[in-house]
Image (cartoon, rainbow, N blue to C red; front, side):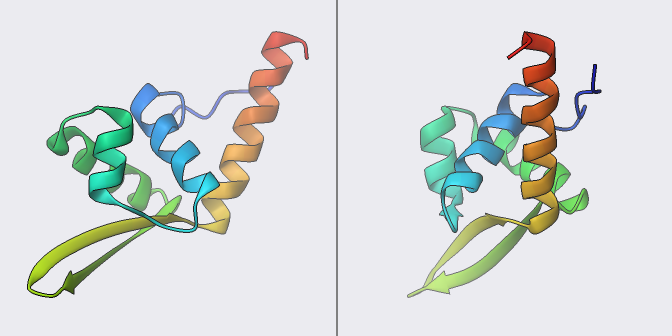
Length: 93
């Protein structure tokens, strides 16, 4: 069986990656809302994923308010595909 990526084998990080794989870019607030996780936990997991090269985090101002958004990289998309294939091998699909 294929090895599961330990970085993606975490509920919140996997949820974030799934959201990003389906959308070109999502805001920090959207991730918090969809995952029902704390802002602090989402922030930590975004940093972990960014350090691995799986996502890019963009920070900008909308009007006078800061806005953080994230998007998946090609490395991240490849990791998600490999994770999905590995998971399928465990499930014998």
